[in-house]
Length: 200
Image: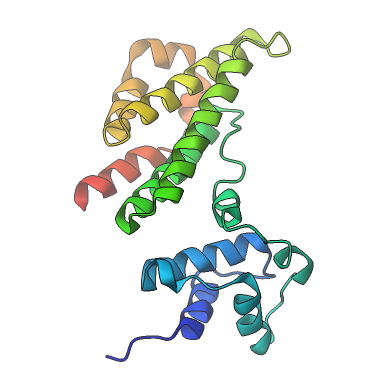
């Protein structure tokens, strides 16, 4: 079977991810897909990816793409918004995404990506820790932020065991009592992620 070209992969990722207008975020996602397919040397410059898309009459936000000057910007975009979580449900979704990227970068032996994953989790832990002490939040909100800080702490210490730990934590009586409503809303994304990891 003939291997796909980079151009074909760019268009395939665009279709697979159901992208609309392409901004810096979409470029980062496309580049990550290229690296997964071709290795570290598979990355293309934002301008090269934009050219492929424009040739197919696809919408591109050039003013964002040409600002993507630094080699680390793709990582910053991939982890954008994951370090600040307002609820347990948001924290679980963020941890699921960080864990997914962390394992992807492990497979690719991408040390920069691994460093960004851990750095994002550490920032999230510190943000939650600070909010748990904030007088601007209500007591239940402070308690919830303290719980979120604990989740990120455990992930940083033992990422491979985190999904199983979270299942046990959410089943604990003190957790159910303290976070009854948040527990109902929690997506269970991390447990699904853990099951997928155990299945691999």
